[in-house]
Image (cartoon, rainbow, N blue to C red; front, top):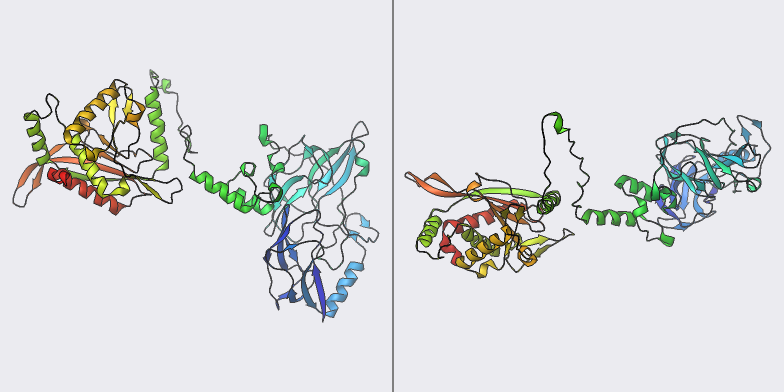
Length: 551
C-alpha cells in the first residue's frame, strides 16, 4: 500500500472556485471516477473524480473552502499494482482512434472546447474555426439547456456560447477564438456527445495566425485525464433559432452568474438580466435570485394586465347578427380595472346570513310618521351603517388592511364606512367618516348629500377616500343574496340584498317576520371562517335589536 495525493486539476482563469459538496468520508473505499467533491466557479460546477481506486485516508478540504489549481484534495491508500498500472498508463503514447498514432506528448488537454481551423474563405484571408466540445467523460444525456449567442454576433475570447447540463454538472462552453459567429450547430434541447460541433467562427485576417488549440500542462497526479484528439468532421447545416429583438440579443452572455445560479433561475422562471448581483464584480449569487423572486411576489398585480392569465378569445360577433359597440365611461373603465385587481390579489370568502329586522322596521316607520327628518324619508341603510360601525369596534381585524409583506395587519383606529352608490356613469363609493360618533339623523343626512353629489359628479377627492369598510346595498332590487367584491386594500365588505317577509316559527306557530339577507365577503389571508361567523352573529344581533346600538 502507498499514499496517493489527489490534486485539483487546472481550473483555467476561474476565480473563487468553491467547494460546494464533499461526497466521501475518511475510511471509505472509492473506485476510479467516483466523485470525491463538487467545486463551483463562475463558469461551471463540476465533480472532482478519484483518479485511483483505494481507501480515503484523509480529506484536506471542507465545505466553503476556496481552492485553486494544484491544491491537495485528499490522500488515498492505493495498492502497489494500481500505482504501477497508473504509471504505465500515463507513460504510454496517446492514440487517436481515427487518425492513427501520434507522438507522445508532455502536455495533456484539459476539459475545454477546442478551436480547429476549418477552411479559408473566398478572399483567402479570413479563416473559419470550428468550436467543438471536449470529451465529456462517462456521462449520459448531456443536454444543451441554454444558447447564449446568435449567428452574426461578434464573440470574444472566453465568451460563453452555450450551457450544458448532465446529471452530474452544469457547465458553460466558451469560445476559444474571437470573431464573428458564422453558424451555430446546436439548439436548446439537443443531446450532445464528445467533440460535437458547437459553432463555426469567422476569425478576421491577421488574427488567425496566432490562434492555437488551447492546451494546459497538468501533473500526472491530478484528476484531469488525457483526452483523445478529435477528428475534424464534415459540417452539417441546421436550422437556426429565431433572432431575439432589441436588448434581449446579448442578454445571456452579459449576465455574470455561475451555472448553479443559472439553473436556479431557470427553475424559478427568473430572467437573470433583471437581477442585480451582490457578489464580487457584480456577480449574481443564489440569494440575489431568491430576493428577486420574493420582491416580485410582493408586488401588486398590474391593473392593465390579466396577471398572466390566458386571454378570452372573442369571435366575430357580426357573423351571428347585428352588433353595436358602446364605449365605457372613464369611471366604468377604472371601476372594472379596480375590480379585476382586487379579485386577482385578494383571497375572497363570502359568508351569508339573515337578520330579523322586524322591530327595526317598525321603529323606522314610526320615526318617518313622526317626521323626525322632515320631508326626508329614513331608510334602513343608516341603521345598517351604524350597526356595522359598532360591530367593527368589537372586531377590529375587519377594520384593517393586510400589509404588503403579508406579515402583519394594519389596524385602523378610525371607522370610516364607504357606501356603494349607483350612478349613470358607474359605481361610486363615497365615504362617511367617524360613523360611531354620529347619530342616525346625521348619518341619513350625510348619506343623502353624498349620494346626490355622486350622481351629479360633484364629489371631492376627500369624499371618496379613506374608507376602512364598505357596504353595498342593492335595496329593493337586491334579490336573495350576492357575492360582493372586496374594495382592496380593505379586508371586508358587506352586501345587503332585498328585504323580504318570511314565516318564522316562534315555538308554537309561524309568524311573519321581516328578514334581511346579508353577505359578508372577507380576505381569507387576514380573517378566518370562525372570525367571519362571529362578526356576522354580532351584526345580526344588533340589527335584530336596535337598542344594542346605544351600547
